[in-house]
Image 1 (cartoon, rainbow, N blue to C red):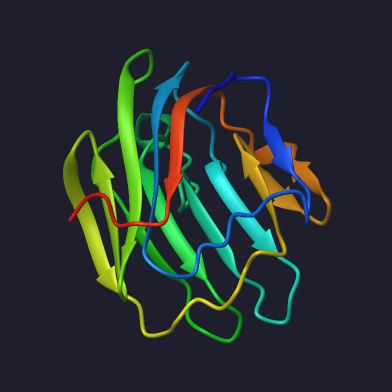
Image 2 (image 1 turned 90 degrees about the horizontal axis):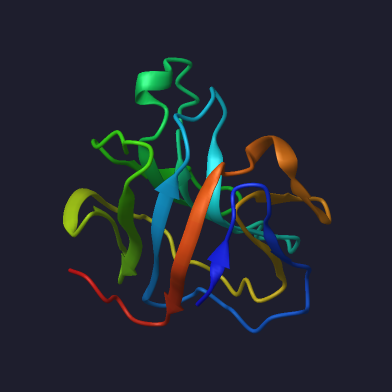
Length: 171
């Protein structure tokens, strides 16, 4: 747990962590947006592996890159595995700036769940398993791309009390 401020990010290069999101897991955090976001996707937590499976996992905002600032803080949770369709969940709540919000992305079996402020907003069954993704980059407050955080996807908010657990905490 800790804090990641608006102009900062926490970055873990390949081989510097032991997080391997393969079974059931939960990624959850408290988020305080400083303002409405821009038209780009912004990641709160994001992984990118560089194995043949190319696993990507993201909990963030504005997946569809909505240019309307009044709808640019809508949460998303997605998992992508090479040669499989992108499975993503998009919430329904547009998070208001200058308020704390709790977000949780959950994988339970083959089901993805997205929770916003304690309420499930989206769920979907994924038609694939997630291969070993221990050899991945991880970024909190940004998106990792080819060995460095991708600053155009910086969050622009405060992340506190992020928890990553190997259990489906919410159902």
